[in-house]
Length: 103
Length: 511
View 1 (cartoon, rainbow over the protein chains, first blue to last red):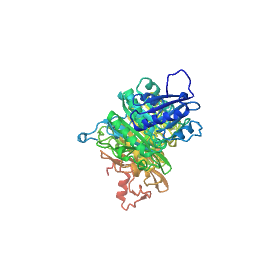
View 2 (view 1 turned 180 degrees about the horizontal axis):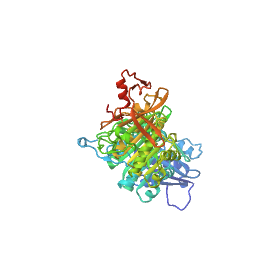
View 3 (view 1 turned 60 degrees about the horizontal axis):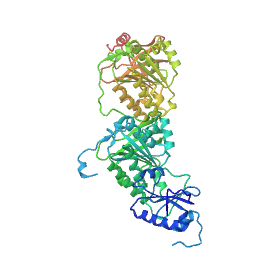
View 4 (view 1 turned 120 degrees about the vertical axis):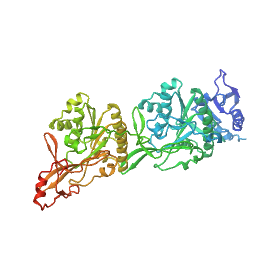
C-alpha cells in the first residue's frame, strides 16, 4: 500500500475514513489492503483519515458513516460505506473486471 | 437526567422568538433537547434558525446548525431573505454548519457493516470550534430517509443526544408530522426525545389557514398550556401572539374622557372610562362610522393621538365623510394626531392582521384606537380565531391604557344580535347599541348603552338623528316597547294625564 505524498500519479486514488480502534475500521483496513493488492498495489494511492484525530476532514468530506471509502480517481467520485467485506462487489464498483474468484 | 438534578428546577434558555419566551415562561429548558414538530411549511426550520440567530444577536451565544435536508448555501439564502447574514457570522466564528444533506451528484453504495460515528464527531467538532451553546438539527425525517437502517440511526441519534447533553448545549431537533396529527411514533424515538415537545401547526379550518404553536410539554419546568397563533414576517421571523398578558394585571382608571358627543357622555355617566374598550354595534347606516368619527374628532380636540384601522372604506372616503360632518381629519393627520391604516380584510391572514395591528399601535403610541369594523375581519376567520384576535387586541390595548372603539355590524336591520356581539360582548367593557326603529311608518334611530363596566349608565333607549352637524341625541323613547327585538310598538296610553306627562319628559330619565 502506498501512502499519500508520492510524486507519481497513481491509477487509483483513495481516501479511507476510519475511527481508529473500532472493529469495522480494522476490517476495512484489512479488506482494502486485499482489494488494492488485487488492483495492483503499485497503482493505488491511499490516504487514511482517522476522524477521531481529524474531525475537520470528516466535515470537509461530509462523512456520515465509518468506514467510508472515497475513490477520488479515476473517473467520478465514488463513495463506499462499510467494512468492504465483499471484495468482489467493491472491485466491480471500481470497474475492475477479473476472472479470479473473490476470497 | 440524574436524580440529583430532579429537585432543582431546570433553567431556561431564551429563544429570542417574539412571544414564544412568554408562553415558554423564559424559554426552552436549558441544556436539554427539544423536539420541534410540524408539517411541511410549518416554519419549524425558521424556528430553529431564529433560535440560533437570536443566540448570536441577543444573548452572546454561538450556535451550530446541523442540516440534513438543505445545503448550507440554500439556508444562507433563506436567512438572508429574512434579514440575517449567516455568512458574516460564520466568518466571525459564531455560527457553524454541519452539512449532513444528501449527496445528489455522487454515487454511493454500502458494502458491509458500518457505524454513524462520524456524525457525532463532526457535531462535537463544530460545537467546540465556535464554542456553541445552541445546536439545531433539521430535520429528523430527512435523517431517516438518508439512512435505511433505522436501528443504526436510532442508536446514533441517542449517542448524539448524549453527546449534546455532556457538551452542555441547549438543542432543538425538528421533525415532520403528517396532516397536523401526532406522529412521533413513526420514528420510534419518543423515549429519548419526548422530554420537551413543541408543535407547529399550519392547519386548515373551514377554508382558512392559520398558524399556531403549542408547547406540548417541558419536563421538569413550567410553561403556558394551549395553542397560540403566530405569524412569520420578513425581517422579523416568527412572531407568536400570547393571547393575554400572563396575569390580569391591567390597571383600571376612573378618569373619564369624552366620546365626542355630549349627550352620549351623559348617557355614559359622564364620559368614557380611560383604558376601556367600547363596542359600537348596529346595522349598516345606523351611525357607527359617525360615532367613530366623533370619537376621533374628540381625540383631535384634546390633542390625543388617534389610530384608525379601516377595513371597509378608503382613506379618502373616510376623510370626505368626516369633513361633511365638520371634522378636519386632513389637518389632524398633518399635525400628527391621526393615523389611518386601511386594509382589505382578505389581504392577509388573521394572525397577520393581529400582529400588524399590534405593531402599528406600538409604533404610533396612540391614546385612542378605532377599528371600523370588526365585522369585516370576522369574515376572514373562524369564530375561534376571531375571538382570539379580539381577546388579544383588547388585552394589548388595555395594557397600553388605550381607549378603543370597535364597530360591529348586526346582520338584521331591526333589532337582533350579530355573531360578533355574541362572541365578543363579554370581552368589551362598554356596549353602545345603535338601532333602527320602525315606528308608525317611519324609520327612526335609537341609541342605548347596553352595558358599561365600572360605571352607572343611562338605561334608556334614546332617539337620535344624523344631520350635517353630526349626531344629535334626543329624548328617550317613551311608551314604546320591543325596540331591541325589532318589533317596536307604541303602548296605548289610556290616561290623558300620562299622555301629557310623556310629552314633557326630558331625556335624563327623570319623570
